[in-house]
Image (tube, rainbow, N blue to C red; front, side, top):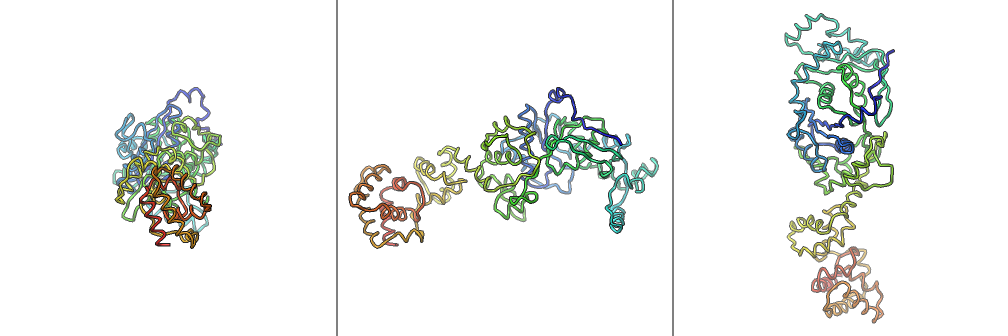
Length: 516
């Protein structure tokens, strides 16, 4: 039995001296899922922490699944999140092109190299023939695996002459190139997150590397590009862990040094079972994409359009499967870069918590200046035909922001500042007693006599009136708030009184007297 050790037991100095280059390599087959965003983020953080380079490669070799607009979407999403790549299509193309479809002329040569070195072979099996083999195995209670057990019994260049192989290719016969997986080896590989991982080569299948249409499969293109682009670390989702032995074996077959690998844990459904999906978001009302995505079938919501701050999304995602070893939760991007360590990424899946997601957004909302929040709120008011002085709007925002997770919630939290209530909370209305109208009329008389109409002064005068006349606080204050707001909610009552002004205050009380 042979033993193969990945080149992770390298000289530490050599590792440190090698430039850090990591990539995010999505396929443009639709919008970027939040799991992909986290992968991009962890690559970005690792690169910046180690003074390295973060690059974006578009893996578009599967033209059947290509979706127009997806590539632009990926670029825009990373820009919005503040984690734009250092190199990508049209930007610092040091190892370009950065689209795999524009690199396809390269892959044939490398596939040929593997054929010539005996590490790969041509397979001419038709889809019908393979289906027949599968059914035959199923009838015998077995699983058909295309590997060392049967590759010399199937329609491959391993059992026909070189001349016959060349003739069939020249005649235009369909073929694929498969990797010839070594036999009887135990691979002891190292993953930065998972430690030592063991694989038996006899359990692996001979993966297709190249198709007769001139396009490589992911496995070949990925390895060739990572080598040519000098990728030092491959940081990707754990769904790629089963592919790790093939990728390491391909590096060995080419005689190349393999990068280091780190496989990130899954982002799990809020209930904790299974991978987070778009369906979970649709069902529970939270986005799983950074930006909105429109198709003929409908619109998938995005974090940006839902009112999330990009910093909040980044902070939340960074803590899905990683922490810095402390209880700290709020990190700027710069702080994340400084603290990030792949060795602190968890092996177990991280449960997605929509409420925690909103909590992060609230924290970042509270960090915004009142002026900026007022500016963000203004378009909502404009749509409703409401015009208000900037300073007054800033004050209103300062009073209500504590209760909001998103700017779009400001209207429901503050509508009474702009419009008199049209209805009154049923439960609160029970506090409107027989003697209340007379008390409210007396309150109007008090308010009419106030010259300095500021919150502090109004409060002092109204409370003095109540004390002098031995009127209980609850008898006045609750009906007063109900008259102005329509419910027993909102910030300090006298702040509301000042902001809506004397005339509106009196009109609302009169309306309540007439309505309740």
